[in-house]
Length: 484
Ligand code: B12
Ligand code: SF4
Image 1 (cartoon, rainbow, N blue to C red):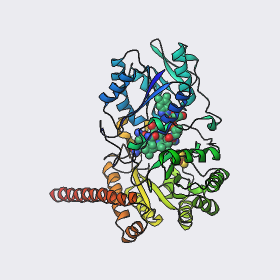
Image 2: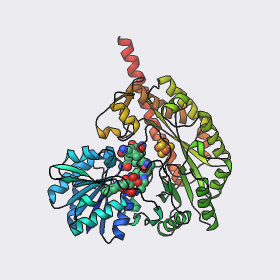
Image 3: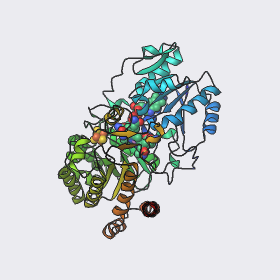
């Protein structure tokens, strides 16, 4: 069967970029690439479309020319406002087209999405590979979709949810993600997120045993690991076919199983694979021998989700980590020669402006190579989202499209802060963090590639914009003060 798979654009409407240069954080979508690979292995023809590169009109035209029989769309919650009209247009164009969606947003709120448009035929709930394969197989053979686990389908006037599908026991039975179906040469990773290009993304595991208040854990608490040999096979495949020089691991908790990490490192070293890599680890799960092995195998940067420098807020977020553990993990990481990327959030329930300032000081103390400061966002399916809807924690915008974390206003405001204070903290954080002579010297003496040099210019531009906004906001405050 001919199937079109689409990633809606998550930036401003119809950017239609030649490539993703300058669009912060735009990567290909591994989940949909996995689905594509499995469907292709089952004998189906796939058309993969990235919404960043095409207008909706162009994508509809491509789908028409391809004579697609089914359309699958990737939906995290904030993408629904883009995905829905697109699906409706596609259905209008071809009423016989079978439409389905999957992804975190689709899984977190299937009934409400399905009820919001009659143009959508089915939702794949949870892990998508096996369910999509059975779904498309059943469509081809005219079988009843209600016999397939992990689906929400229409049943007369109503909806029918089939029993949940167990997650795959063995991730090694999956093919590599179908990156060859994507226009890989048009993706440029965010300047701050890699040290060089070409860079590829990968997963060595699925799942996390943490329980953070703001995190949507579609894969549950059990961590499933891929065979280290196959992980390194995939790295070598990218190096051979795409000239890859850096790998970004999107695992939620890469360092959970130390033996697994050691085996990956040993395999990289044994095969003399020359590649830099970047991972996310929890601060309570690293030690010096592990970090040394990672450094030896090419790891250049570890991302720690720090979130706050105030212990009571780490407790509110249910991080199950202490400020001292974070301090020690970052110190150890730097001591073995691995850089750190740390991320922070403002607007935690119960947080005050002064607490936010303390977090900024903590970030400066940790002195990571790169940092990101976000307003906290309650995503559907998270305990934070459920709490807010019960009247706890604070108030939030009901528009799904407000859930992008890089917007100029926070989606959520706790009872203890204002929206302006959150945005001011974000601006202050970047300017106070970057405008330190010692830090600037650290960055300038650690340029790892021409790509990173460009990153510095790009970062300087953004910083200038923030300084300007900060000055304007101070000026406005002073003016309104002098009037009253
Ligand atoms: C890697 C990642 C990114 C990367 C790449 C994103 C991308 N395009 O894939 C970057 C850094 C760019 C990113 C950006 C953002 N991300 Co992100 N990201 C992740 C992360 C860490 C891993 C995703 C992943 O690849 N998982 C592995 C693959 C195999 O799993 P999967 O994506 O779930 O796909 C499976 C199923 O969902 C399903 N499936 C997926 N798509 C489809 C489509 C169809 C048709 C079907 C049938 C099935 C199906 O099958 C797949 C295979 O089993 C997740 C956290 C997590 N726990 O997964 C957050 C996560 C997906 N991101 C999230 C968010 C909010 C964002 C941003 C909005 C943040 C921002 N900057 O404002 C942007 C939006 C960009 C975008 N369009 O995706 C949220 C989504 C929450 C929600 N309820 O919707 C998550 C869950 C994190 C969280 N806080 O809880 N992200
Ligand atoms: S440690 Fe990371 S992936 Fe795990 S629950 Fe917390 S935020 Fe989610």
